[in-house]
Image (cartoon, rainbow, N blue to C red; front, top):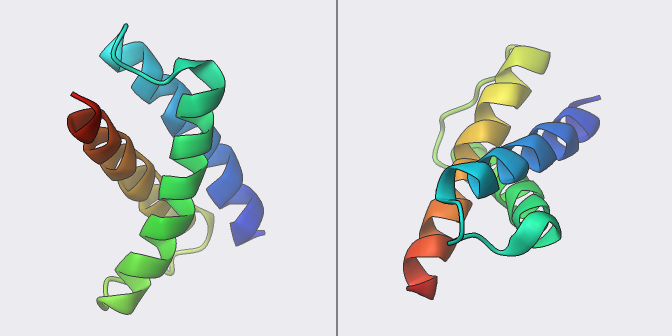
Amino acid sequence: MAGVAIFVVGAVAGWLGGLVTQGNGFGLWGNVTAGVGGAFAGFYLLTFVGMDFSGGIIGAVVTSAIGAFALLFIAGWMRR
């Protein structure tokens, strides 16, 4: 269940990140892919450093959103 939530939230975060950056993103599919990748990375990295949001689906949503937005921010910053 958490894997599906990570994927869905990552895709939505990537799409929203593309809307926020307007013109500086990676296109729809690039943003969604970066969002999903960031969500999975955020889930594993936050768990690794001891920040475990194990509150079920809400914890997965929070973790996925943090990772997805962080990766999109870093990728956009590096692209400039």
